[in-house]
Length: 189
Image (cartoon, rainbow, N blue to C red; front, side):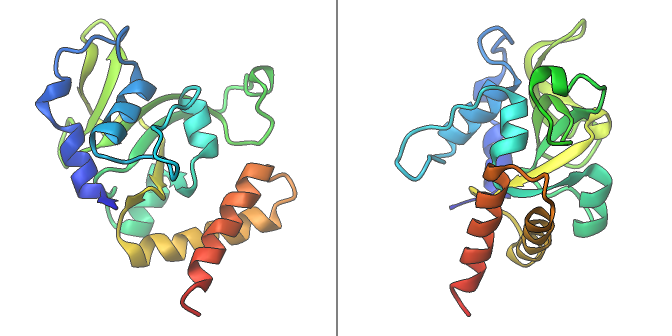
């Protein structure tokens, strides 16, 4: 398995420099880094989500706000996926009724310092892959397909799984992810 540090190192690779947004958007950038880091689905195929909302909602792993992650881990783990989540009332119109907000952007946390997130965006100052400050990102995901600090992510995954199983509004996908987390923890018991 690939560690968060190795995933962040792959994201920092110069091979992504100069790729414009219309060839590699934010979701595509994260998927490309996964592919280039050798991370595949269990059947060997590459990951391909339907946007940052699909990534935020459907990937098993620890989720929380940036503040939650700082409180829990002391810092944002290298290789974490960071999202801009908006609760702007438009979620239901987009078909989301799960209370998880609207993920409008995703990037990869790569290093400490001012420009700590590697992403792909189109703006007045940049078109394509580059760096930006963490400050505009609101949420963090530590996907299970990447290895972070096992002790911390395991205890948080257990807490999140328990919350999901208690919440009647949880989706079927969330229930399945929670059960997978619990089953993996039970292997050694």
